[in-house]
Image (cartoon, rainbow, N blue to C red; front, side, top):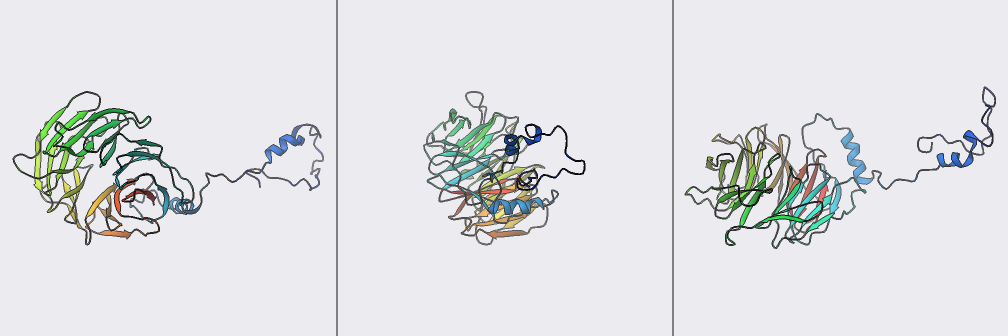
Length: 379
C-alpha cells in the first residue's frame, strides 16, 4: 500500500486476468501512461504535522475518553513550551476559539501565542505578536468578546487590536496616586470594561465612546483596603469585588446599588470567579477556597489548602482547577462535598514557580505560567 493506493511492483509479470486482455488499454494510453502512473504511485513523505511523542500519547488516550465524562483529568503530559518573556508571567488568558492565548508579564509586555498540535511535546513556540506599550508590570490581560479587542492593565488600561498590535485607547487613572488595582471585562454583547482603583471606586468605560459610563463607590464608609480582584457575572448584571482585608462587595451593574457586602475571608482576596447560577468562587491568602451563592449568607462549599494558599484557579464545568506556589495542581467540585485531588508538578515538566493558570475547556489543556517567563501547555 502506498498512501491509499495498491502498488503493483514493476517486476511482476502482467496477468491477462480471467477475461483476457482488455481492449482499449494499449501501451500508449489510459492506465499504461507511465508518467501519469508514476505520479499516482509516488510515495508520500512523512508529514511534519503528524502526531508524535507526547501529542500522540495524549490523543491516543483522549480518543478513548467518553464525551459524557464531566471530570477534568490531569495527567501531566507536556505538550508545548512558550519561551519569550524575560520576567515572571503575571497573567494568562485563552481566547474563546482556543487557537490563541495571551500572556502578560513583569517585563511590561503582552504576547499573543498560537495554540496548535505541533511536535512531540518538546517543541518551543514563538509568540505571534508582542505588545510593548506598557510602562509597568502587566497584571491583567483579557479579551472583549464583542469587538474582539484585547484589554491589558499595568495600573492604566490599554485597549488594542490583536491583529495589528495597534493601541485603540488608553484609560489612565484620574490621579496618578490612585492607580487601578483590578480590571474585568463585561461579557458579550456588552463592550464595557470595569476597573477598580485604590480608593475603592469602581468605574465603567465603554470602549466605543470617550469618557466614563458610570462611577460607583464600593467602600461605603468602611475601610476594606485595596480591591484585589474583580469578577463579572456571565449575564453582566452584577460585579463582585474582593478586597485586601478579605471583604467582598456585590454590586448591581444596572443600578449601581450594593446588593451585599460581607467578610468572606480572614486574609487577602487573591482571585474571584463568577459563574452561571449566581455562584461566586473566591480564594484567599488564608489558604481557603470558598463557593458562595450571591445572596446567601453562608458558603455552599469551603476548601482549605493545607500548605499554601490557592493564588490562581480556573473553571471546568462544575469543577475548579487550582494552583499553588508549591507547584501543586488540584481539582475540586462545586457540587459534591468538599474533596480535592492534588498533583505535584514534576520538575521535568515544569520548572520555576507557578504564577498563573488558564484552562482550555474544549481541549482540556492547562496553560501554566512561571516566574522564569516560560509558559507550558500540559494535559
